[in-house]
Amino acid sequence: MQSPICAMLGIEFPLLAFSHCRDVIVAVSKAGGMGVFGAAALPPERLEEELAWIDAHIGGKPYGVDLIVPNSFVGKGEAPSSATAKVPETHLSFAADLLEKHGVDPTGLSEAMAGRQSFGDNMHEDGAGRLLEVAFRHPIALIANALGVPPPLMLELGKRHGVPVAALVGTRDHALTQVRAGVDILVVAGGEAGGHCGEVATMVLVPEVAAAVEAVGANTPILAAGGIVTGRQMAAAMAMGAHGAWTGSVWLTTAEAETNPVVKEKMLAASSRDTVRSKSRTGKPSRQLRSPWTDAWEAEDAPKPLPMPLQSLVSEPALRKVDKLSEGGHEGAKALATYWVGQGVGLMNEAMGAGQVVQEFKEDWVAACERLNGFLGE
Image (cartoon, rainbow, N blue to C red):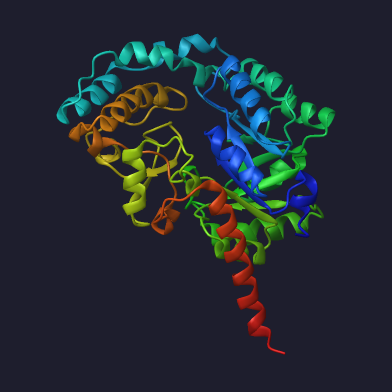
């Protein structure tokens, strides 16, 4: 396909797949798209193991790595280990009480919170630097950053190694800031997206950013993101000014995905109305599958979510316990179980392999383009 994304990344089809699962990364890249491995929560030694496995199985196909290095968060400039001391007892008690209401023993949450510290560590420049050092020892074809302008080291290493740098944006102004910073690809994420997202819908944000980038004389390629789970949506985004698509949610129900089977079943049965955009999981707005867990944090008597990364230290240990028990059949845990997913979940109604999803994207994209061409007549 004649897209600048394909030329820049050396791929056949400009469909990028964000996933924490190495099997999904390999399957998508082998099918002609490009897998982007989510590494934000991994310590350097684990990232080394995962990327070595990908290298051994991907057959030389391009893949990328995604990090979360926010421009602002609580504890920036301080010792990373100090974060746990800033978590109020009120929030820990609220999480524990919520588990108990559903028959889940909250014992061990404080200890698990301390073990979650690597996620916060990786947001600091030193922690991110260690992950970048690992990533650039491997033949990655893309490095991406969420939640702000990439740190200078990421931009520097990208240029030094000839690896494009991508950045997530949720507003027109953010996009122009990223262009001025020198990023190579804009991931323009609408509010329908799973995970961290803004408030502007994809249908509005993509053409708004495309026009703004063109107006300043830049030619930075755009990947549309947010609710895109079909080829026809990808074609629509490209008609509005994007050069390809960045996707995440659609891979969560694939055969290769590591998603909790209970959550997979919920996703396959969910409608587009069964998600909620909330700060209750990470401290920044992110879209998740609605459950009694998300409802409780949105109630009037709930404590106000802590700023990133403190809220994750409260939520993730509890939800890890919920996941483990739900897989064993615990009814209360099954009810609480949730995960990040976009509004496109309403179109995710059939489990299939990741490679098959890529093929369906291609076929659906071609059919959509042919349909549009049909309106032109002879």
